[in-house]
Image 1 (spheres, rainbow, N blue to C red):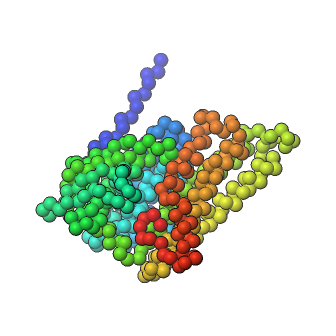
Image 2: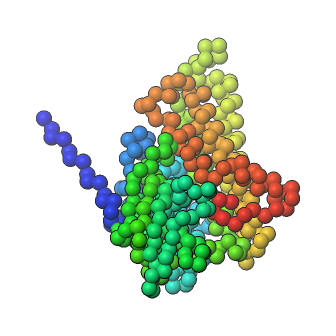
Image 3: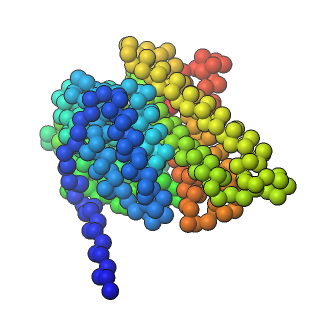
Amino acid sequence: MTKPTAPLPLPRLDIAPPLLPARVLEDDAQAIQAARAFAAHAATEAADRDAQRRLPWAELERFTSSGLGSISVPKAFGGPGVSHVTVAEVFKIICAADPALGQIPQNHFGIIRVLELAATPAQQQRLLGSVLNGQRIGNAGPERNTRHTLELRARARREGDGYRLSGEKFYSTGALFAHWITVKAIDDEGEQVMAFVPRGTPGVRVIDDWSGFGQRTTASGTVVLDNVPVPAENIVRNGALGQRPNTQGAYAQLIQAAIDAGIAHAAVADTIAFVQERARPWPDANVEAARLEPYVIAEVGRLHVALEAADALLGRAATILDQVNAAPISEESAARASIAVAEAKVLTTEIALKASEKLFELAGSRATLAEHNLDRHWRNARVHTLHDPVRWKTHAVGSYHLNGTYPARHSWI
């Protein structure tokens, strides 16, 4: 009788992950190539990871070592500084394989942009350099029991030459896997700051209590901060971002839209595969296979039209972001970028939800069996698209075109 293999020990949650060597990619083409290779590997056990809620520790290390974690680091700091078009494509490719592996580093990328816009030159050099060396950035996210996601109760109190940080956060995607945990808090002057806290710092507790029915392996749970010491050099004054036009929010939303587009691509691909290989035709259709049923053909056609429209608006939004960031940013250009991304986000939200639900109508009741775990596409789409209500995207688009109103300056538009 074969002796059962002992399970691998789980990483400790009270210390930072090990720091492994990471490749630095050279250009956009290498980034796309690396994304495709990583996605091919990630897809093989994506359904099982979701079904078992098995956290993707090894996959995240592979993502980082491949160089994908540093593709947005500007060339001035030694990174490839890839285009927004490439960033969107990379996230879409990865999320078609496993959207949890796209959502986990989405804040890592968003915070890199915050460093570009709000950090001091010394902070940029040091923190962006750590990303090039293979460190991951996670966030201690919004807080529970507040009026809305912009309200903060966490506090950064001055103490001597540094600060003491206290608070409790939730939706802390990436924190469990991170080397740096970023925490938004209010300082003694009432200004918002972003603290960079190394994992393993005394007083930091990361709790794996995420129980969402979708995006199950993102570990988007709780971070508790109890009088955590933070040196002044690790405090970035990100609150000043709201005082001038910028594209930080549009960039964050572009990645969100790309994640939803990836989910939609996976749902459409699995719909087609199931109809081709397993589904039965309706008797009245008088055809030999479900793929020959005329109504099924028409519905697959509609899905593809909607998917290609979402892809087109996503690519257009990324191109506009590239154009806007190539010149000094004005109120008008920042608004144009945000609206372009909002328009894309409307369609990526719609197709992610539609495709993941339509799968079952076209594939039939057999597709609902747990052994296939195809419901993960809808669960992932439904949970991830809740980040930013699409009703506020359409409102922003309408206000912009009808009344010339520029959208608000924050990460959600």
